[in-house]
Length: 303
Image (cartoon, rainbow, N blue to C red; front, side, top):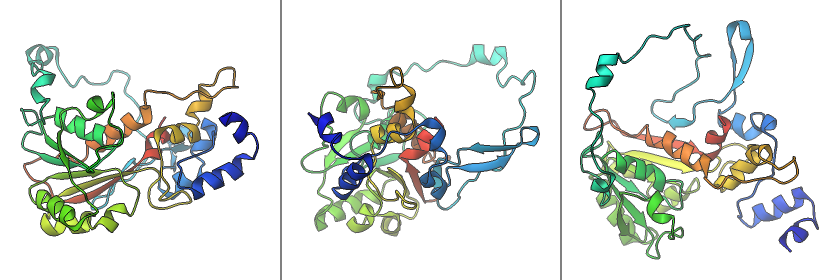
């Protein structure tokens, strides 16, 4: 019945109506069109570079924005050597001990050793975008506290434990003044805050990076959004299936080019979490504070 209803009107009409209702939606496009989408150009994810004998090449930009120290693509990768030098000698591999830490040792909130031992993280994320990044940091030894609304994460179900593994739990009403005060009190002794709200939500809550650094100048704020805060889709809600459709991933896996297929592994969500989890890790005990942004579409640009 749903398919029949959608056939009753044009794609453009449905996208307009769904967008007006605040429902995440996007067209099913082809992979070849994705890098030419105006949204990717607006957020710097479509880069044109000269690659010597190969001529001009279109490639993805930097997927993570560090506002204090932004990165940029300087050119093509250097030619690969015929026999690349070995980073590890055979003797080094033989003498490097394998990790013997059981995964269960960190099941109750991390902090049981690892490269991020002593690092404290507040995870305000919901569903998958956000919590999985926190779970990765917990796996590396960070103490991660998941902050949920009083009613709990809407994704609580069979998959909740997997994507929130190793995190402690705390419920706070961030829309209440006392809830905001409680979060800021926690931020005073926190290294990293992760969220996956739409652009502008943290500012409305009075919890964006400018507010957090007032109580902790060294804090790192990591925000993950659907499409970023600029461009024709800036500020729009985004979920993994929407980006799969728009990036051409669904059409590429279609059956005889007729039926679009969605990957249920949420590959884009996981790829984004890996990218987002890496930058916040302080090299020393304390790092200079920064505001880090990532967008769902960035993970798809490289796919």
